[in-house]
Image (cartoon, rainbow, N blue to C red; front, side, top):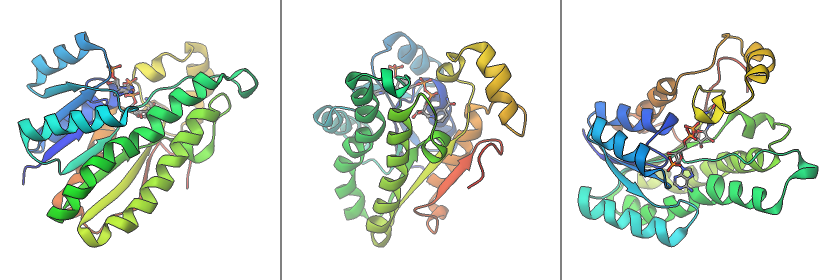
Length: 241
Ligand code: NDP
C-alpha cells in the first residue's frame, strides 16, 4: 500500500537513493533539502519527486515545512531522518560552532522532524520512523567527536521512541551505514580513502547509496511491524555489533 513519506536530505547522496526507492515501492515521497536549489531542482525534474526546502536544525521551520507537505500530499506516515553534515576536526582544534552545527543537524534534527509528526501517527495508529545514523556513532571516530556523539544519540533516541510508539503502531528503527560512496565520503582525501579506509572494509569496497535505500524500503513496509528499536548495520563487515 502506498503511503506518504518524507526523506530529509532527500535530494542527493543516500537520501536521493532512499527517495527514489520509496517512490519505486509505491509511496508518495517528499524530499527535503537545506539550500542546494540547483541539485534539488534537477532531482525533482529527473524523478518527479516533490522537493521542499527547510533546515532540519530549526524546529519552527520543520513544523512549517511538514505542514506544507501534509497540505500538498497528505498525512506523513513514513519519516526518514537522513539529513546530516560533518564538520571534522581533532578535538583540541574543534570549535564550538563545529560542535553545535553537527549536533543541531544530526541529532536535534531528529527531534525537530519527529515531534511534529508523532501526534498524527499516534492518532492514526501507524507510523514508520527510520533514522540514518552511522558506523561512527557505534565505534567512535577520531576527528569526529561531534559526529560520533550525534550519531550515537540517534541510536538512543531510536530505542527510547520505539518503546513509546510500539502500542500505537509506530515502529522506530535506525540504520548505521558504513562508508558509502557519496560526496560526503568522496570529500575525504583520496590517499586516506584508498590506503586507510577501504582496507578496513572486509567486502573491499565502499557501499552504494542504493544498498542503504533497500534497508529503508524494508523497514518502511507495512509488514515490517514487528521490527522496532533495532539497529541495522550496513557496513560491509567493517564493524560487527
Ligand atoms: P550528502 O552530503 O551527500 O547529502 C546531504 C543531504 O542532507 C543533502 O540533501 C543536504 O541538502 C541535506 N542537508 C544537510 N543539512 C541539512 C539541514 N540542516 N536541513 C535539511 N537538509 C540538510 O550526505 P550523505 O548522503 O553522504 O549522508 C546522508 C546521511 O547518511 C547523513 O546523515 C550521514 O551522516 C549518513 N551517513 C553517511 C555515510 C556515508 O558514507 N556517506 C556513512 C554513514 C552515515 P543540500 O543539498 O541542500 O545541502
